[in-house]
Length: 282
Image (cartoon, rainbow, N blue to C red):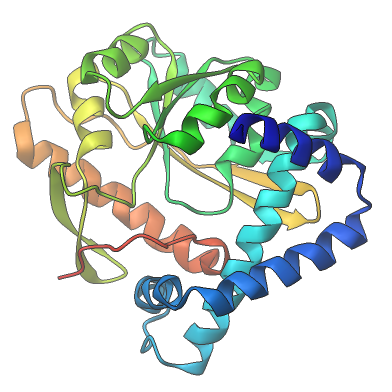
């Protein structure tokens, strides 16, 4: 039923003019902002770390409202992109794609990683257009099940986080790219305490562990909107894989290097950071 609803919604979204979609997105985002105080509090706590201000400051509260509205815009763009992948490709700019190509050239795969910055799911159609296979590690829940066939049609290969780690490792060892989001750790996940925005926080160990075990470099990226139905993907230079025999210390060093990269990216694009999950700040 949800899959059908998404298809119908995407068909409607693809036909609506951009000004109308913009007005509806702002309205929907504002209503959600007003109706979900717990979400506002979590966003404020996380975004305040990026800005270095109190969660109750005017600037942080304004940023929280703007991000919830941006989330609605991303959802509208996602529905549009499901129906108009060619238009998405035409309206997207990719900066630094050579970093990904060079990393894949090593033959050990690539751990492509981001925070919940902007909307990687909106640009689902880009990997196939850019000529590489992308595996996506996603939460094993009802929403992911509903969207999975659409992602697969766009050229993505879905791996659920409930599956054995060896499946992700096999894809990397085959020389493919694996996308993993790196800013939210479920209670069951192993973590490392690193410094982010100059403060200590627990981040999931997964990207660094996969990188060490498979010898795969980590390539950070962010996908941010530049206007209605227009996107810019920024691909950073790789973070080298930790030594295979370096153990936890090598993994921590790699994760810290990744946190340093995202300190700059998240500050630059804080208005697009969907930091709606509780993070273990120290």
